[in-house]
Image (cartoon, rainbow over all chains, first blue to last red):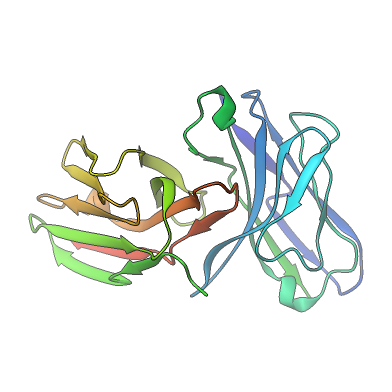
Length: 116
Length: 111
């Protein structure tokens, strides 16, 4: 089954304790992206990756890091989480426009993060 | 700055009524997507519109992309309780790979 998986689904942590949220897709998509969803603000893009070893900032990258060492994985790293990073996080992937993709994104189930 | 303005934000209607949701921008988009999101889940694609003026139908849902590729609309005919959810429009401005989402329209259809 074609899917995007995220782990963990729920996480409660404390300020300053480094954490990683994993994302994996099995559709051989080149493009992957991370979003956060907050009430009243909608979905905002954090980082995206066009392909392996190619990443770029979205609209809200501060406090986050990403890496793309393999095509299927795109982990989101919070080196020193703060309470304002409490949010619902989504990973997504899509086929490259160069390969006929039309910007259709497939989303993971989400990770609800609480930073105390 | 919210580059994709979605309206209305909330909509509560009776089963069988029609409704239209709008997604507007001053920017040109290479394509626009409409997603529906259920509580506790990620957004799921409904449709992608690519060509200016394009109209796509998905059962009782009709999607239109503006001629200038700056706006889109979603029309639901004879809404049903199963249509309840959060509807999101999204797109990447032409020449970029940064995606922007509208703030969403929360639809509730009462039986």
